[in-house]
Image (cartoon, rainbow, N blue to C red; front, side, top):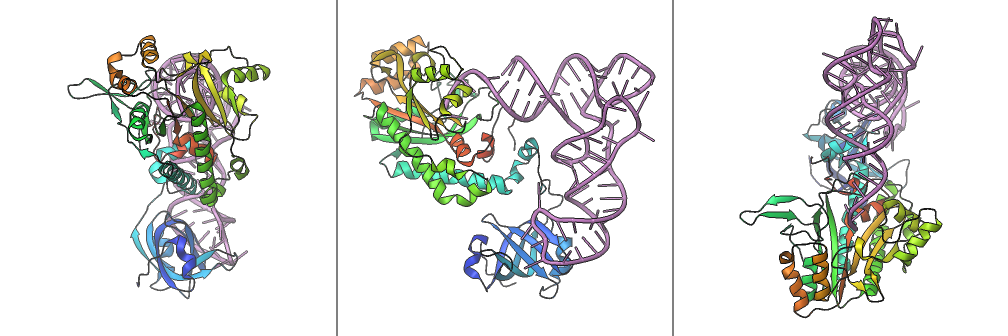
Length: 434
RNA sequence: UCCGCGAUAGCUCAACGGUGGAGCAUCCGGCUGUUAACCGGAGGGUUGUAGGUUCGAAUCCUACUCGCGGAGCCA
């Protein structure tokens, strides 16, 4: 077989020429005079048509016997325009050569239950829906890196194994660490980001983070990716502008480069096109009033639940920024508001359509005395934070940052029901394999 | 951890307390350029596990296991 290997996505550049495509059988529809093979190679699918008269080496006769769903093979043929559809190209197939045979592939071209599909996740990745979602994820990751890299940020990888809890609140995964006692899987890289911004001005950390909370909802994973920019000499106002600009850039990239994927996912693109600066901004106190008017009263000082977030953000067609939360519901390192000591300079960005909190951030407390008081008040181990306090001892400056959950962002972009679809191999409270 | 729902063929589901079915998948045959193709035939089950009620349980009751949705926690 003469081999002129071409990817499916480039077939349109080879019309009229004989090429070979390597891939897997997505679907086979044999008939008496023509046998149709839908071949998938990761870059797309192409219909290969075997004719009784034109095929070589008995490929027409071998078709049904050898080509089973998800068998891998090489197909050689001439690239032609589809007789019925414009802008669709197919392969007038002459021959095929088997690589690996597949027997009784468990995922059929029909609807399946979620649990079944995720127990087959290693194979399910081949299906068009996960494929589309993970392509969007890839584009979002690239947009994140491109945005920060082109805005003067330095990537600063934070450690995954840490000695202490980042915020001192959540439940963490613990493991023995040689003679040094317990180590924990990081729940945030933020404190390290703060060290980094004092060295580089603007940094971002981007990597996996871990939460051992027994959260079994459509918004939670035990292992997820978070990107956390941290900027020296930036206040809450600047933090909000950064978050806003950052989100708009990601949405733009997805809209520009992921049209086929969004269409495959039947995403309502107009919802994403509405995402433009500026985002509406309200304070926590305003939000409490809005909730009272909407018949979902919440006492001032209590944190919002997911239904509250959805209710408050329901009036907007773009992300909503809620600021200045009560001190008690937020982490110890957030800076207190000089105008209202009851609240801290925090900000949460709530995505529309019920996707909830995609960003949480704040201006950080730069005053060491206040910080020490907060650590004592939260009963956190002071010695664990000595290095962190050093950042305030040696040239402390106002600084701010936020964390964005990658999977929540991708879920919003794709309009998926469940966050587990947005990561190749989701780790949830009851799933550790595949 | 709490609340609600569920578990029946490989997969998706149906079946009034009275001999468990269909579609898809598999195998066999047919076939119109088919595209989740279509048509005919065949094989396929200890109804999640353990107990209980009953002449009789997939069906009612109890416990357990697993799954789904929601809450809390958060990104």
